[in-house]
Image (tube, rainbow, N blue to C red; front, side, top):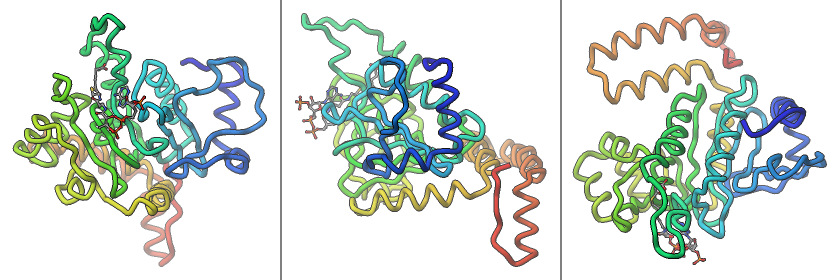
Length: 309
Ligand code: T3D
């Protein structure tokens, strides 16, 4: 964890309860993300994010990749800041939904390629280690996060960023956005889970075509193919994402967490394994306060008020 002491404590308090006061003076990003502009004293460069924006309002956390001049490509600093942001999201009581989006005209162009080569043209990094240390950890954490994670794809999502978006639970893209498995253009293979999510969602042939040809897949086609949840008009993206996030934030969070486990396991398990897993997870869901509330609300002919417990 990079943040220390009072600042970290303050962030939890602020995230959990005082988010409205942040938003009041905040600048809005593409999917409703807010840049914190409060009057908090700063304790030096590590106290603030420099490559992402962070906001939490009414249980909806938003992380905005924020290097628009480099199409939000990932640097070591951005990876480190994302780890801290995910620590915050994972803090119990802070958030019930996470939105991941990009600032400016793109979602992200994947790894910052200027990090990979020095001025002499020498490659000075191990792409495998970089995946292990950064993308794979992030993807695993997003999948394990006990809440829905929405990718709001506001523009091009290329390389590892395309597959990071696909690693979120629900993907909504602006009509002008595209998904680009850019890897073949630079002699790499799809990573960040792409060889898994593509094959499972759109089949081997389309996965192979996207990987080998490295042509952009328009958001609309991605939605038609079932690669993403939805494609919406550009000027509707922020509203659609906020509406969805708020609906999910007032839903049965614990059940959503169990759904994630069941559905992701369902991509690989056989039928019998999946039936057995459903027994275990449904038993747990059936013991939740939200289940009791859901049944009471149904019988009482009123809308449920879920607490996420
Ligand atoms: O290291 C590891 O961890 C290994 C894992 C690697 C995983 C990966 O992600 S590999 C794939 C890396 N990404 C790419 O190969 C995509 C590179 N970018 C592009 O092909 C194009 O930028 C796009 C097709 C995505 C968008 O094109 P366009 O024409 O809309 O924008 P642009 O003009 O190319 O980019 C705007 C600026 O962002 C530009 O800077 P400039 O010229 O205005 O100063 C461009 O250089 C910069 N930029 C875009 N992508 C990257 C980047 N700078 C560094 N790294 C990038 N990936």
